[in-house]
Length: 344
Image (cartoon, rainbow, N blue to C red):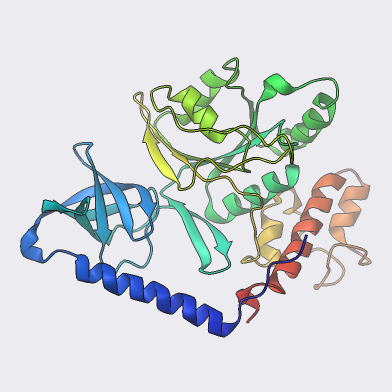
């Protein structure tokens, strides 16, 4: 597959100019203070371009414009907003300010640098599945991201009803590695409700986000946990074996028993090219006692003599699969930096 073309500085400036123009037009459409009610608290249910759906303290949802002073707004943000005295073009209010975030999950974006995905989260549920093919690399990437944000990660293997003699052993061996390290692993299936009780217990009274590749069944799993939602879902492509996007924007839902859940858009790859090698290594938590003990300070942890991580693998203290995953992430970061504007 061809690498994505690197944006020139001129292209980046053009993109930013177009965004500024849209913001200016949006500001011209906004209400005057006299057209708005009193300031009130709310939470962002979802973000759509220059608009956001905000839930009021009474549980009603209003589509709002954003003040130009707001540089970033994502699902889960707690905000101060004002309701319009009339609805104009389906817009019912204005978001005026954003409270300080307790936590934030982000990922790099070619156009916007590091782009927030969701805010004020307690848990990240990393959804993997039997189909599309189980991929431990993307699990490791999310584990690295969760370590940097200090958000508790939980690994979920979805579609366990599709486990068979051909795939069961390799998948369970991979998941056992995460259990050995200390991560919680949950088996789930929307077909037979496997794992539903365990998931509901873990989700209660917390704000969680479902993340993962396209096609792993996040939206279907949300539907099984909240049957009244009827979120649109799609099957995995028969031609490519890859997942298809169903959720297009992150959206927050509430459990009647307590707790909140954000369903995020599926992705094909979760990039980490905004992180340093040191930050990536911190995400491999079993490496911690060996980091900084290599013979050379600039050790690349490949074939370097005196590498503490390689020695730990040889002694059986670190799994070879985990070191190989770490090395692949570092290689992907180097490759991405050659094709993104972060290298300008």
